[in-house]
Image (tube, rainbow, N blue to C red; front, side):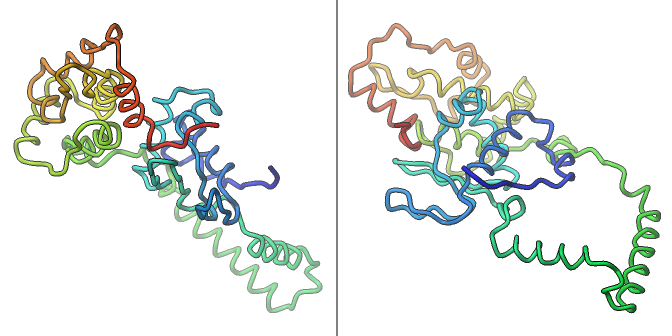
Length: 280
């Protein structure tokens, strides 16, 4: 693979810059995305897009599948990427890919402009030199006036700034992790809000804790319907009382000793991994 990508120094002010796993995944996606449109098995994969899987991202970057999923959800929540999932593959798009990878036309224009700028000032018209010097002076004045305004301001999630409970983000998190495995949440009812609020005040007072809960459910096949009664957990069951979600977090529904039929194994595998391209 040849070529290069670019990052401006302002990347250090990006909200995920100090999040090691999220930054690593984002940087990897930029490096691996198509720099021009190509076809993959009859599918058009445009510039700034790539086809991959969570397992492949985990293996390549030396982190767990859970950490990959968490990082992808973070990047999706701030519109850095979009994710399209089918039963055969996952297509990830870097939203502002052109900010990091120029196309050939842009690169040639920049190189031509650089050559012009590097010409001796004697080759440039006098009025251009005067205008340039004036602009530089004005720019310095503007920078001096804004010194106090350029101080770094900590980024605060609006939902938490006013102690608001992020109901919709909790539901989105549930649907992202469990929506293809057990019944998804289609509407945020008043009753659901009430139960979420109670659970939030009890202990689940951050999105990270809710994510931990949903991942715990995902990793317990019994809760996904792998049991003789074909019972599965639901969002309403999880938030109904503290006893239910505590059992899930403590993994009291693990069925490690339960022998699965081939159909059960196939069904669980298709639910869990069917949306991602299988590594060959």
